[in-house]
Length: 180
Image (cartoon, rainbow, N blue to C red):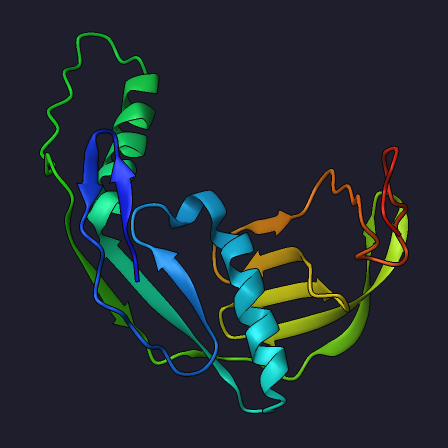
């Protein structure tokens, strides 16, 4: 189910949506903000199936407060350009619209290979996933460290990672009163 607020407007809760198998949420209009890290949960779900032919579906979620938040982000980006004498005419809903869910056929993943990746000068053992859409590197404990999207999608790496609980054995735990 999805719900949420955009300013003073509350989006009505959606009906329950059931998705079979591993999936990741593509929040229409907002995915660029957290695209690589939204995929982390999907990779972990795929690994838990133990199915070598597993596919990860993309569940596109639109409507609700997400539309209004996405519009606000896009308008703010346009206004930040500060073009002289340019007026921005925004055509957008004033209140949340109904939620919708649309799954795709899924992305096939090759079984992961063992690899290593350097984080903060320390070499980490990782699982390296390859698909037609890109490559993904994840720690054995399930933390996505790097995404190389296919085509011109770019490469995203987790930077300035700090752990306050021992999740990645090779990296130190930081801060006073930390848990091992």
